[in-house]
Length: 278
Image: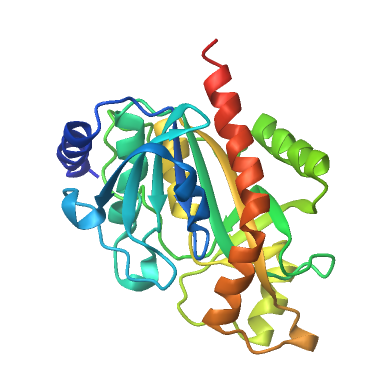
């Protein structure tokens, strides 16, 4: 981790040179969920290739750019697409944008993903507000000599997702009259989808949905002292006794159709973060 501090400085300087505001909120958009970025005004778009030490996003449905501007009048950084371990990147590079958000003055990270639903009470297109997670990626972005300038050696993970933000997200869903669950996300490396036996195992250990992202970013956000709101869009059902073949095209189509629900929760969270300054 000792190499990260200077990398964060260089990436922060590049973003600040192109966009001089201080972000209040950072948003990471998962597969097929780029619609929120379109709502950003006074925008400056920075391809990841133009930001020092940012990896390039190669996954389908990820634009691969940082959108800087205002959402609901609040200064935000929106990652239109993320990086994944299955793309071959180390977790400290995947999570570098979270550390850059904190260095620029951000206080809240909203992280989203498309996922497979294993809870039989869920349906494709539902939103799950992440209450907790399980890390089965066989790696951790905090491995290595700890840099106390970035965070503590042993960050507490008793409540990685901010409880008040979970409650607020569920409140928004009720007000907007759409289904939102509260549950557990399990992260695996991918890129293959799971076998029927693996889905049974993941469900048995307490997971409601499964995906290939989010957990590394949240671990780093907690390490850096950020508040966190996690949102999953259930794009396909992974019920081992009624398993259907999932395709990228179908997953992206469901993610896009559910994006307005996601946007309602995100805009409320951003608005609340802005009001907190008053």
